[in-house]
Length: 325
Length: 224
Image 1 (tube, rainbow over the protein chains, first blue to last red):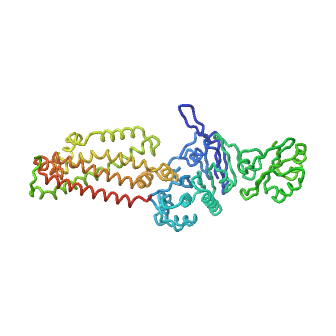
Image 2 (image 1 turned 180 degrees about the horizontal axis):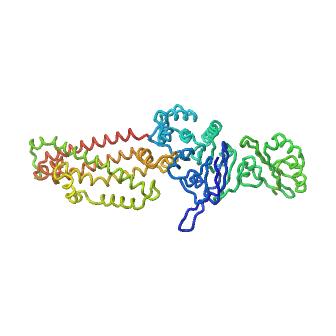
């Protein structure tokens, strides 16, 4: 649905060129919720600007639903932008218009009649759960309600892709959950492809099916959530399922065990760990539900001499095991 | 004693007519000021580097003209523009003719106010509109101007009051209106009662303008 090939964006500057995107490849399937994470300066904002063609990449291509955005003339670009719904961190609603007219705005500028645009806007406000607030101006809505209106506006043009740029960074924890839940509902109901740019792992944990970690304008890690979390030692595995660090004693060793319920059911994992009895003890562990799968990590403490035996036993059951120390 | 304290009924009789001249001159020139000043303000803003349609040369030229226009004192500009006034109106006296330098003098003033009002509209709103496929013209009318309407109207009020002040100056050089009453009778003939009357009428006019402006801003501003 979204295909980026060898995307590069270089900003010329007097003190040498700044490379914001350094040969980025990305493929997001239809109906998927894909998260893009990375530290600030990793190229997330530039990526959004290239995806929406507000910025032209230095080289490489951006294709949405098979249509190449790069190199399109202004007029057709405007048409194509309507196929992308954009949700902003700071919502960016128009203060002079009511919630209803904000949602109707994309349709109005596309030439839809006022009556028809408003009818569609009413349906969309209903979809985001704000059917009764259409007459309110944005200033009289809460942050969460404003973001719901923002999502409704993004959906007005029947987009194929919903692009969310830090959609919850300005919201509190509870409102964030509601807004993300809404994004999920929208995907389930409309079958739309969603790309969420965020710096919060909790956002990825809650809604994403797959994730890309950007670093210095490149893809550092990429994959379905259940795969990246069992990928030992990677940034995403560590950040998505955090484990408390525990000290390791003399003559002792530490093992890290990770699993996905796609491979081994949770009950069996716990039973196997209990079977280890005196051989190894669980020091810390986390089980999360990510993208509909139960995934988790455990840290085991054991005698240094037993680590090979235990590793082999657990691997035989389909668990991912690595010796940490 | 500087002023006579007599009551000059024959001059008072002309007060309503002079008031109408001032109102007429103000309305006529302000119409021109807003119709020309707003597009100039838009042009300066959208052509600046990083603007909606960056055009360095156009930006520099328009910004320069606005600055020159604002730096010439109105009374000097009025004398300077006498040939232009003659050319357009066929005469350089009368309230209608002097509406011309009055308008030209206030256009740069309002253009700058409009530019600042547009600047107050967040870039995020512009980007959001571009994202849903708005053309630049649609962004200017539907987002920039529409969103800044409360501050634009506030700016119109300020401009209007300045313009009323300038219109009094035209009265001293044949522009008619209340200014001519104040100058020809109040000042030149020491008629204190006329001076007081003119002052009160100006006060009322400015009050009405200010109250109407504040009311409009309250109606337009949906952010508080």
